[in-house]
Figure 1 (cartoon, one colour):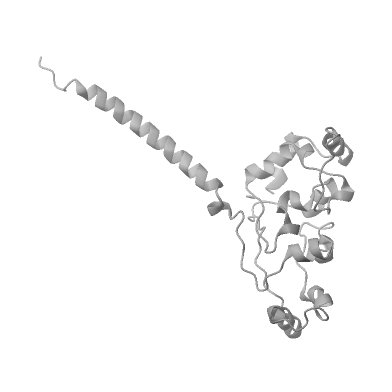
Figure 2 (tube, helix red, strand yellow):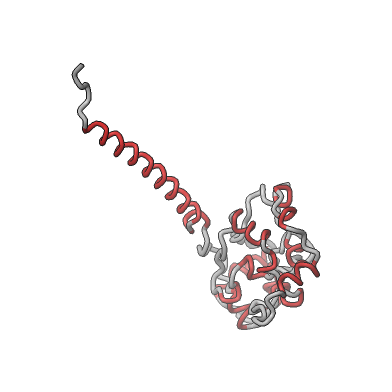
Length: 219
């Protein structure tokens, strides 16, 4: 019987299959890279706000403690967004006539809250409680990044599930002494590599099996 296909067909078919596999693998890698990129996570993106509030100026330069504005961070799931009255405590006297702060004065005068755009906003299906993290020794900048060095606030981390799980699997790498939680310049002592493990034990932090359970964050 005469040969139906030219012998080069074998090479063509092998090359075609290889090309298909490489294309699929490349497409999956491209999707994964995009999904982790700032284009998808908004990491590092500055959100437009009604007033250009500088954490750098208020915390690093003036030394205002995080809890002065975020009053419920130690007691509830939500850290709290300061009401206009908190801003006006100082700005009745300081920069009282600044055009940039007119939205703040108008909010106070008209009793209409400022509509701040949430930068660190988790989806509704993810449960996060600020108070338990603070109580266990997780510092503000562990999740929010170097807020004290941000002239304009941006998202300091991806806030994706894999990022949360890294901490939940290895809390000893992230916790600090309770008195240092609000110290934005805290650095763990270099001469005490076991400090994290001791802090985990002292705070009664549960093991990775419990911390990575679906019900811990999805309720």
